[in-house]
Every structure is written in structure tokens, then in C-alpha cells.
Length: 36
Image (cartoon, rainbow, N blue to C red; front, side):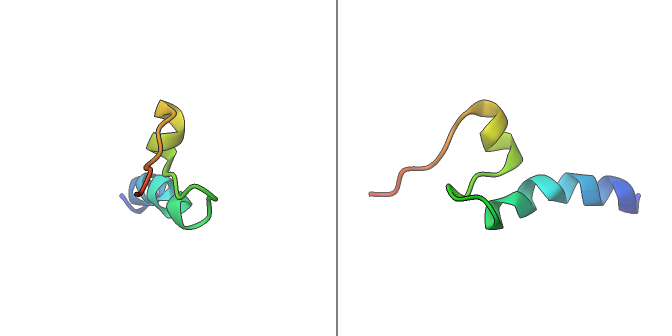
């Protein structure tokens, strides 16, 4: 249970460390947010 929770959170933790603040799901889908 701890392992599955850790794997799930990795995608969201990536937001803090990527230049465009993308999560794993954003990278897979090829999307990002544009703020005006």
C-alpha cells in the first residue's frame, strides 16, 4: 500500500522540479498551462 501511494505521488511531485511545472500526466498528454 505504501509503495502504490509513493508511485502515485511521484507524478505530482515532478511539478516542483520541472521547468514548466508539469506533472507526469501533463508530459504524457503533451499539455501545459499558459497564465495571462
